[in-house]
Length: 207
Picture 1 (tube, rainbow, N blue to C red):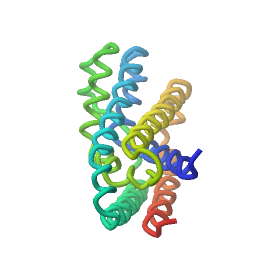
Picture 2 (cartoon, helix red, strand yellow; picture 1 turned 120 degrees about the horizontal axis):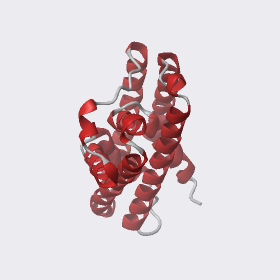
Picture 3 (spheres, rainbow, N blue to C red; picture 1 turned 90 degrees about the vertical axis):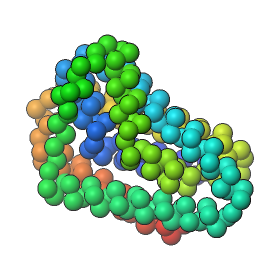
Picture 4 (tube, rainbow, N blue to C red; picture 1 turned 120 degrees about the vertical axis):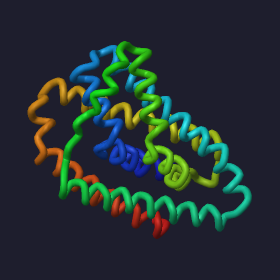
């Protein structure tokens, strides 16, 4: 297994743990949408990650072949993105830790409706797009087929995120009062923000 894979898993897990639209949607689905709707939402969200990574792979191959300098600039940009996400997470943790889901998504029910909701939410999430374009390429080694490696990392990204959301929704169903406590959410956000800042600095430094 390439040495960059464990770091990639840790990074995608931390990003999945960030409070946001997808996390709020997952919580809403487990509380109100039902099991089939939740399963569809998980599948749709994972499909969005695959689409993002495939689109990034198509452009990444050309960038790597054309200019190593461009790849270095891309790596630095990816590190900056991680640090910005970390800083925003810390700022949010110090002000609010709300993960209240939007009520308007509840109009879609069943697996198909949940799938469309999860897919649309993912594709409309700028965090996922920025990560696919700026951060995902940092974990692709120069050896081997770049396109297939990027798509494979995208599949891993989808798997890690789905695993976290499954764990989160299971925890919500088991202890709704505990998971919704602001202190717990704030502590999770602070930890995630600090680690993202560290990862961003390491990526910029080329470690």
